[in-house]
Length: 300
Ligand code: MG
Image 1 (cartoon, rainbow, N blue to C red):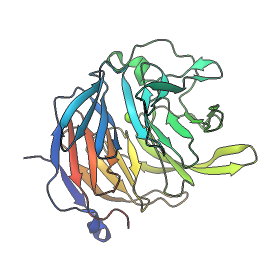
Image 2 (image 1 turned 180 degrees about the vertical axis):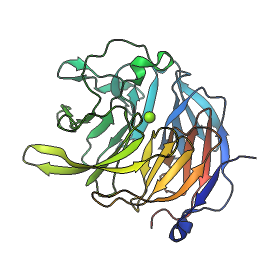
Image 3 (image 1 turned 90 degrees about the horizontal axis):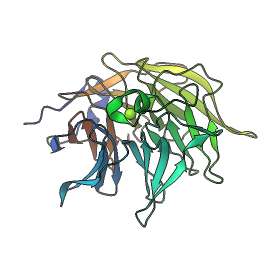
């Protein structure tokens, strides 16, 4: 019996509920994080266990990288390549089709990142990621080391020349930038701040000087625990992982807070989530377990 439930409080959002029971597809983790679907295979991290695991229906769970240099967040780019935020390497890395890993970015203006946590790619092929301190400050989530960059920021790796730009240098400081995702049209970027317990939004502007983040506003303050990973569904709702599970937020309006449409309750803290490529189900990394929850229609 899996105690994972989706409760919808907004009557107009009942179609998000799927048929069938959530299933537990993995257990015995130390701290599961960073889920991403590579086709029908789920890949995720056990950050504290220092390994990366995979699951598919036919083969079940297996460890695919160990030790993993404390990989955390994962995503898949438009070519189907797996990208990881690596605490230990203090870098964004990418697995090529031949299986080898390459560094996408490990320095900003000659200084090493803190410990990249989570990442997302945009339609133009850029990689955006968050860089809080957890891989330096938590002894079981990285190799430690000195911080070289002042501040904890969001960065963008240019798809053409691999140059790295700090996107939040002109913004008020963030304490724990963590989950990161775009709105469906990529005009808004959402970032959770685990230390402040909030989800914030930024308008994304493409100008003569390249891309910039402009107006910033508060979208949500979590009621319990700290917000971690977040994802956006095709209708623009934000699904944010945190203390009690996952909160589902209405598509944000510029300058306004979102409403909570519903909550997925999990037995322990959920760190992150990933929709299947067809949006029929949601994988949840919940402390020591991974759950797969069937969904209704999240595209409308
Ligand atoms: Mg995270």
